[in-house]
Length: 262
Image 1 (cartoon, rainbow, N blue to C red):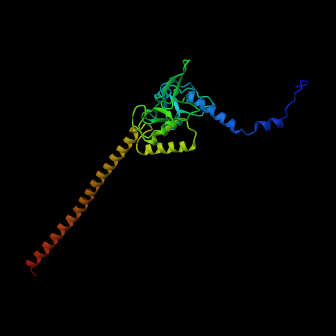
Image 2: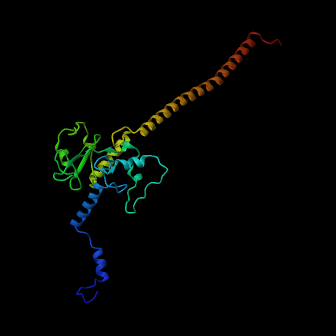
Image 3: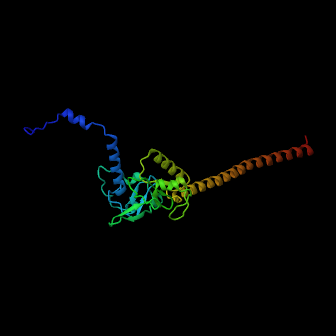
């Protein structure tokens, strides 16, 4: 601020510096930092993620299981305050029941020489996190490095031997546009089939279909009954008309056989 050999930046220089576009390396560093936070913190509460009891929704976001339970349980208490910087709310997750989540099964490894536990791929032994793209299998929930799953030929989980379809391999915390479109299409197809993200039958969807079938059946029965009533109603005046016509014909023939004397 004077006599120190420095210079005071002008406002024009400050604005120019603030508006400077980030470099590719800076963008990558920011994305990696954001991804690292998502791998270590619950997006709904910002609490640290536990090493166990982790669940995921159809988008591949991960949460503490207790967080989902607390939000699904009916309560008169107001939900905990969400920081202003946190945009995600429970309503926006689309989670309506436990069928909408899958419990993840991570392979845990203790680092030699320390007591810290990390998640690793049981096939490649790579540490799972922001630097390694990870996926999990539905319905079993076992987690692997994506490259390891691509290399196996069989559609059977290497950990539990449960079969899976390639379309049910869900990437964890993917920002890839192609992945997100595929996941959105997948959940739309599952909902149309009355199935949830975990591949369990959606009871609400089944109930709606059952009620619709019952309504259609009732409408069919009511329609048949209405047709029968109309047929009966149409038959009654027709029979009256026939009886009247018969009486008229009978009277006419009676007059012919027994003419009235003049």
